[in-house]
Length: 467
Image (cartoon, rainbow, N blue to C red; front, side, top):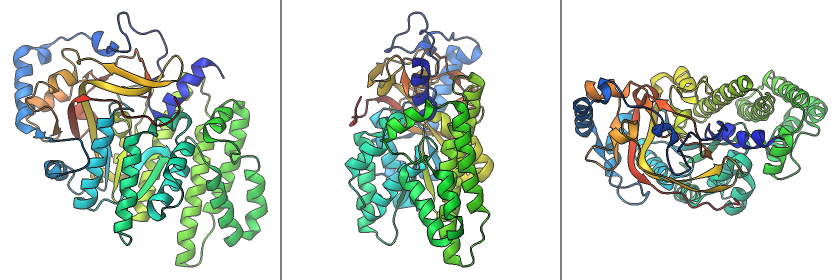
């Protein structure tokens, strides 16, 4: 595998942060914002008086947040609760993949939604099979969380092995201990890996319920289940010739179609069948998603569209068949309606809006300055990076002029002057899995999200895995 491919792939599966691998813009460093530095501010929308009126409108509409900490009173989230209203799926983004304040705020919001709004599932950018293992832990206490995190948060997903997500999962387990008849659940909606347990679930179902298909399914799955750790399996899989990866996808598709065509006779059988088909589909999603030509820019874009559609379909499936209202955690780019980037042809949020209509709500994060964990784009090593104040004219710089340090803002009901300003693309922090990133990101927040949570300052999460 080339260095370019090795660095691209973690970012492809989590966000676009490391995909632009050309040298950083002149004068930009890992501690500065190249996209803000290089984007000029011009036009009436950036004029002093107009910006002052925008800031005043934001101040009038913003609802102050007292804390990002999960513990304590959550009364300041009542405003967010009213904004979310009756939505069944809430996409809650993040402007980096490694800032503790975003993760802690997600924990806080999820607790509020569980306790006040009846939400019962938390969804993460994590493979379906990994989500199944965590769900077993959350529901039944099966396994050791430290072992599960070490084994499942690998490769592109190892950045999730941080103290803040461990705290959230432990809270979910504790909640279920206290509420055994009304539990919360955890799901992974992503396609980047299919663990051996997932193959066992499908094969076991076939052996018990469709024995005539057992031999065929075993033949189609032969050599596919991982026999190494997740990170090694993933790296070695991408080193396979594309023709072989496509052949594997054809085999997993056949298993999925074989199961999908079966017609169970009883209600109990139908429930088991639904899950088995979904597990088989998740296996195929990985094989199909990793069958694209990752050396071709057009194919990478097609892969990203497939991936976002897959994540949206998995979330919609979970909502339909569990009945749970879901908090969906992902990067801002994924939960939004428009990524404003040609490398993201269509986002998970856009697919969910198509499927659920106004039962899906997108909440994005913005921040003024701070720190985060990220993969180094030159060596794939996770370390802490820090960025200074957002530059004049950027989304974050203007939003941060409001008197509130941290707040929630409904972009749909803000005063007209603010909505007009928010409808125009401007430079914005869009920090993904890798850093430094020389790409200039310009986003119209009002077209990307329904709601934003703005934080003045963020700090890096505490990473627990290997660099």
